Image 1 (cartoon, rainbow, N blue to C red):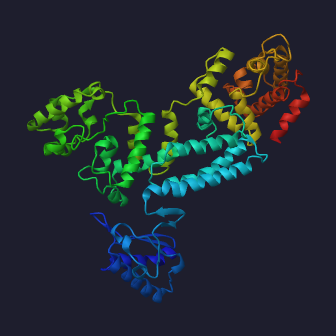
Image 2 (spheres, rainbow, N blue to C red):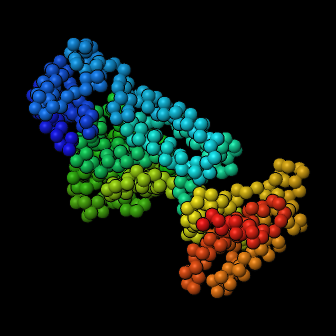
Length: 560
């Protein structure tokens, strides 16, 4: 209701003849509203400020609206830095900056990271250090990171256009890892814990990926070039003849006109970091424009190449059919390109043949195609980009999967591994149960064989049978004592569901359900019983005793 009532004031300020805003060439930006917070963008302050005060006073006399003078601040920029208090009265004059919607706004845009992110990081370190000694479970600590740390940093990253240094993310990730592992040595790399659950991780926030996804969303808006997004006009200031949609696919070191555009420069710097991480070519792009391409000098001096845009040839990729460069006759047939452009075709063909990526027809990079994919989405663009980055990265849990394949002498398909990881979260809402299953999948429990590598007093032999090497698969499955226990459990389960069950380590240990239709209706109870059996073994992991019925009953209490 307040937003509706305040709109007449905003419209009066916009249309006042003496109020001058920031001109972007196509439109003028004067006022920004968020609830009861008003942000004014004024040029010619000597005439604009008195006019604004006059409008506010007139509006207040009719509506009862009053300005909170104590919280009103004027920040002079550019040639207006010589303003004095008499001109800005009754607003408080500040040369250092002000705080708006939780963001510290500075005269020097380069200081936005230092003023906003680093104080928050300092407070996060203090909080996590204070909470480190609390009796919080392993997954509970990860939940703290998701609910507390991520929300505080994510908002700032969405509001600040700066390219954030890698040192910041290394610092915050190091702090998160220490909190998760209670300041002890990590048993599994944070990069693997940051993977999605279906990929073998625990979805611990990767803050650098979140920052990259936010900036890629901004770039996708450049590429889509939606006229409804009025801030694109401000982003394009200083880009000269280059369009925002072509900037991500050009070498920004060769673009002289954008150096004075702080937002564009910082977003492109972040984009370069993204390409270095996920791209293979790290060079020329197939989505680079045909016209006004700094790498192809003739396109910058010959206006004839701009005519190609009219015919539908806008980017380098339009000149290719698969991995092969199209002939001039093909371009004529497909786009109706006139014969007078034949010499230009010879020029660009000669240029393309000098670049290995173009000559070999390697095609667009996946990270670049991702920009066009996200343009088709209406919502959840940041989440889509964030999860896609994990699929493009080299981080995975194949080592754990291959270890189980080697132990069980079987092949675990991609779908089976995905199901195993998802089942580890579905087994129970109890964090402790999920944590134990995750540690089983990644073999995080210590074994005699592992201890013998750094402890000379440990023989490495199984503590139960005292005959075989105490490897992980031996302790949890193939040890004669443990295998007898599994047979007994299988017999009891068969009597409960009145159906014969074949012992399968994929089901008993990793939680992969039997796909047979007759057992499908028992899927939930089988999942619980097999988990209780695994937990009974872990409760007597290194004490040499065989698990008993009492252990099984105690394990079942997690599901009560």
